[in-house]
Length: 111
Image 1: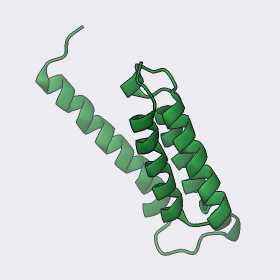
Image 2: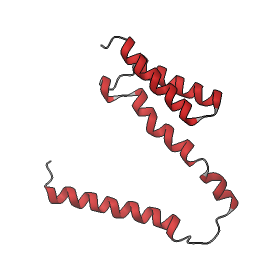
Image 3: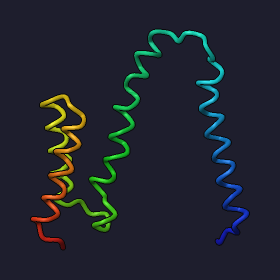
């Protein structure tokens, strides 16, 4: 099934409107009213839940390897996690993961 350019733009526009309405229903309707403490406490965990969900597929099924995990990316993920837990420093964790990934891609043979 092929879609015309108009169909693609219609889908993009509908998704944009849907995304806006979903966000507005939570943020816009609340306005300047204070949020309950329980909601504020739970919102702190949003980045902790979203970031691993975004990164895990890139580590476990990377497009660069045809969807197969490789040692370099797994080692980089482990180094990032270890540095983050050890020093509690986000930038250090990112740097450790990046350096490990580049070193692993340089040192390890590609298949």
